[in-house]
Length: 325
Image (cartoon, rainbow, N blue to C red; front, side, top):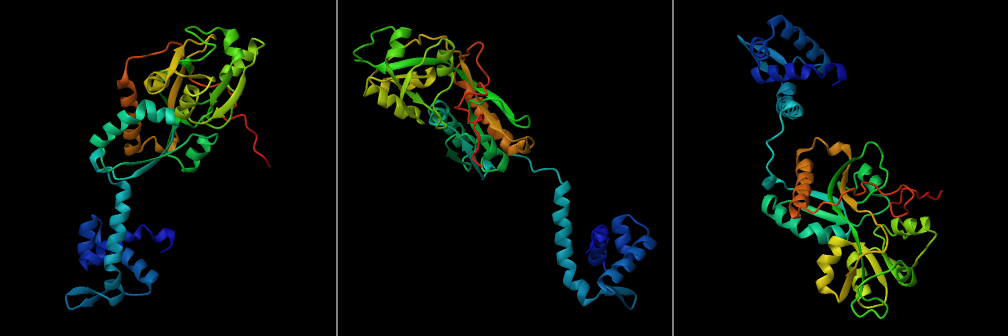
């Protein structure tokens, strides 16, 4: 039907269900002349009488009978647009979300989150992919539903919520030949470093801070995985600057010693990021709240003055990257 005729569908449905102009008018709360006028328009549109006299009653033509169920289904489907959403219950949440996160997120929050979701939403599926320089674009395009990470300047439409704060410590193997129980800046600069670059781009906060002091370090290895970096440090003379929560969680598994950095490294905030299309989605909102509840229930550890954003020039954000044309 033409767009201007769509409003006639409700009248058509009533006529087909009642097989009577009077009955359709009563059903719709309209006057009989108004329904008669609508029937005339419908007859012209379909080039079919639709309702014909059979004694004192009216019966549907074969064309009307054939479309009766289809029109009824169409009206029912259209009415769902205005219907109140079904009451949400996480135990019936049978869907899949794609989430961008590093192994740091899995190590710090993953076990607790799984326990929570297995109890509250046993049918929910999560598909994880590593963070990249294109997190925002993946959220915009719908390739990803949620991202967990540390971000620089974000587009104004993106939604963000802080989860936890963390700070940095330094790690060397327990039998390191040059490092005892303390670490000086001179020693720090002398050593070869392994850097964790989750988005695949070395450099960043530590190097920027050193550059402001006219110093630099040698990053001998830059890898995207936190656990691999810890293992590599335990088996070499490299030094690692890494998140404190992660180090203390893994330190018992590796033969390492933990030291205070010889630099004034500011704490940072781990946040979740999503596109505003999901703001009003009850299920997505519940998933975000689940991450938040798990994160805030872990401990009461708060770091004052934690950075909420990385510097826009930080190469680890990827936001300063120029695409090749």
